Length: 247
Image (cartoon, rainbow, N blue to C red):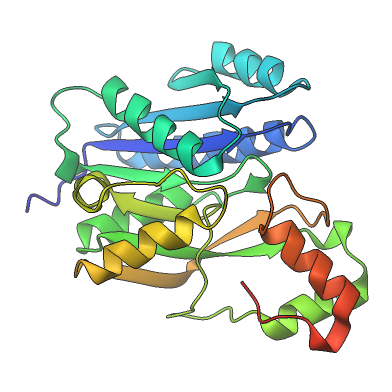
């Protein structure tokens, strides 16, 4: 396989995220600028999928896209995060040049309430060059949104180390060729990220779990979807020592 990276696609689903979206996009833009400063030959496109938004999320996304080249914001009525991610990937791949075959494209996924680190895309590019077919990063809830006790409970249960077991759509990357071969994101209301990684591993592809890619995500206790990270934090807050294992 040709491991030369020619295209990078970032996909961000958003449902009523007016409070967090600009922080997310600004972090992605910083990472995009760092990658292209050292690799100007890589075409980067960012897809923001506005799923059934009823607040100012669409307005903010459209405003940011108008001021920053390489961004697209599309509105959909799905109400389904798996379908939104799949739509964003399909639309984004169509926007990359024909000179970018799937083996040379990396798909980077995050969430609208998450701020990725500045080296995010550069780390993904390095993983692609080194032969990884997919990469799972780690996340940390914004401690300013949690009590000190709840943050401590979370950190005691979360393994922040190489070869960790966590899978987060907020910090996930996959080669486009691998993504297409395993069938992409399914239209699941939750755990579409876990499903994709499970199928990728089952098909024999190389999945790297790393703590070098560490993103900051919302610490809210009421999320936008059932069984998400916010629900886990809420359970942790309510159950204390008997809370479930870390996601």
